[in-house]
Image (cartoon, rainbow, N blue to C red; front, side, top):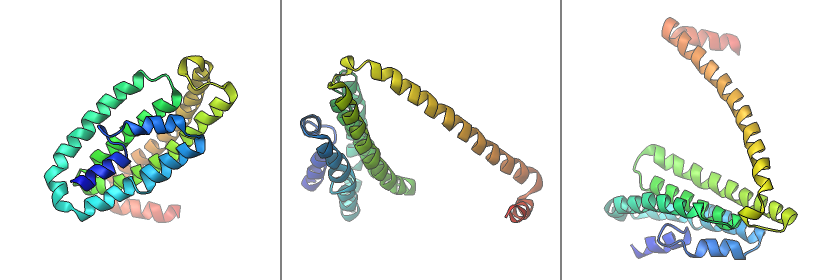
Length: 203
């Protein structure tokens, strides 16, 4: 169990997360990128915890529900702490803790979907969290401030980018939904064989 606690401190699970926001705030942007991507997620933190859980299966079965509850409660409490943050880097560090608690909950599930999903979540979170820290550094270089209430103009730019992104995603989702609906319609009314014939014709 002490080995688990060592990994929980490294990936900054709830109750062991005090060092991470301070480390992100005090380090440079490249230090934050290395810390977020390599040390916490893809390196020794997330991947090491996965290998540890696969090795000690009995401990995982014994303490799995307790660790799962700590992850759920930690996500809720740390999200509340995100609301009161005024430093952008500190806020992103707290969001990183929230996501690592989610990954911990996925690690404690015993389903095959959870096994696949934990690798996807660790890799994707390692990539986009380092990207977020790089974007924060770009904003800091232009404005000279990291405080949220002094960077109010960024909110409008970010909202416009989110709106553009959502418009593009909706177009893509409607197209994919339409293709899936046509497949489902043809499968229901004509059966499996007609779909094979149409697929061969399309190729």
